[in-house]
Length: 467
Image (cartoon, rainbow, N blue to C red; front, side):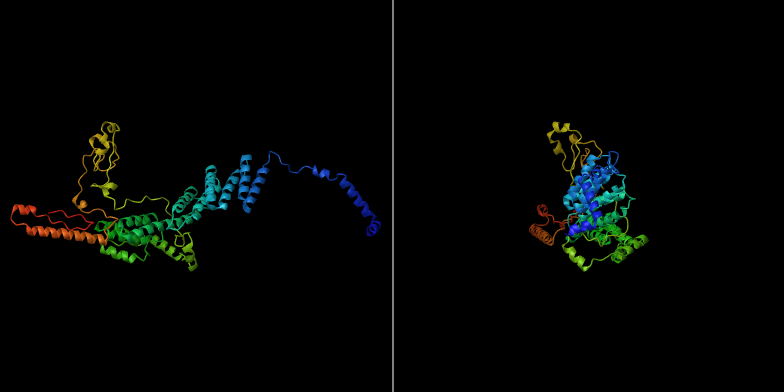
């Protein structure tokens, strides 16, 4: 009833609705479905690859990394002339980087390296190398643990500064490099400190010398020099000059160090000149001490259970070490073996000139004994493998002073070993005294029977020559 009353009162509305229904059911909408796009897709445009790239970016943002990589690989394989080709390759690396994990980061590093190889002149190449630096930087461990990731991070951060020095990623890479080198220097210092407390002073000196030379911006470089000077002091008067050099470096390059006064006193005792402090070194150390942030109570508590290193003591300014220095030959190695002087060495070897000698004389290899190479096996090359190389009949005699001063050892005698040695010397001396009393003085037989008195030496010192 209501519908009929509405139709009677509004005839125009009824007519209009009827016409629309007829047009709709008669296919009026069909022309809209057949209408062409205003910007049709053709082979001359680059729109399909743009659609694929946008879709992959949305998948990366949503965390669908596998789907995003499949889409990007489709773009790369299908549209090899696309302007988004380089960005697609970079997006694949970014997807692995965001996915994380050991496998994901290793894949990301490989993709970033490929991008740098194919597009070295693009601005994103510097970003890719910086991401590789961050990959190893994030996987670093403390100084007392595995240092493989720290070593790789040092190399990759250096690469950013060497290959892209003018990019905006150079300064962040420099800061990370200083932090990485702080960890590597701390690792070497810990090893030197262990050897120093153990009494292996040659090994400790080698570690401390490497730390102070390779990483002068290390927060504990002055402490390393102080320990280095102490190690040289304990090794004897032969190392007075290296000890003085270490103390001089403390006074000159680290004027705000707490060991400056002790270094000056020791230099005075050694009758060595006391240098003036370097003004640039003073300003740098002052800046570092003022801007050094101490770790709070919460940070120290978290650091006990965390495997991540603490960078609070790392240098904030200065130029990091850009080249890896090869460690020097330890002082415990005989000098002749290190090639610094002549003398007797326990390093034996020789150069065989011709392989025919091995067929003619089966003992050609055995002819090189005690540093002497026989005539049949003598070499003619310029590189000397040892003292007896290149046909030398015998090794040159060592000077008396050098023979009387052997190199320091990393295995000093313990207190128990010294006591046993003293007991043996006392028993030998007692036997010699008893034999001398029994012998009759004045006879040749008694004089011949009198044994020689053994020299009293310590295990680390050779016997004094008999007058």
